[in-house]
Length: 229
Image (tube, rainbow, N blue to C red):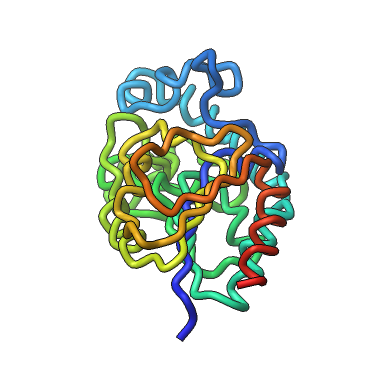
């Protein structure tokens, strides 16, 4: 039986592949106010704008390549039973070779029904077109969890974190809930490695090892630590 290693990743790991972090300090994402492109209200108000925005983001994702941090995480499967829980909507973990990835906020390379979120479809090409309908006859929209929507995978992710024998946090500020609360489900005795140039506040957690580096450089250091154990 391999040791259970659980990884929670955020925008910081994808940033090194050239994908901008979801929300910068000014509240903008790629020049757009997130409230104009990442809420159900935005979709009802201007679905064409929202569709166009995510079509552009999807093209960026498809043009990006996994970076060394993604590849090193995939390599960990040789030694550990690895589950990655990611806040990211890109598919870079899968393309790097990771085989067990839970997406909290959906995957941008898929579409979903705007009537029933559980109806999910792979996208043909790189765009969802207005007029493309699900089997219920409603417009297809990005398979992305927007602000104000439920996070359907959160309970599964919490159960995964509760089973972690080793826990790794990479590239997330722990600012977006409910994802930020997942670290609280990790057992106290479990060693917790946090990789980020700016370590988020984790007061009250035990067995924390802080690696204040970028995702790639931090993963290199973590690989050395884990191989020495």
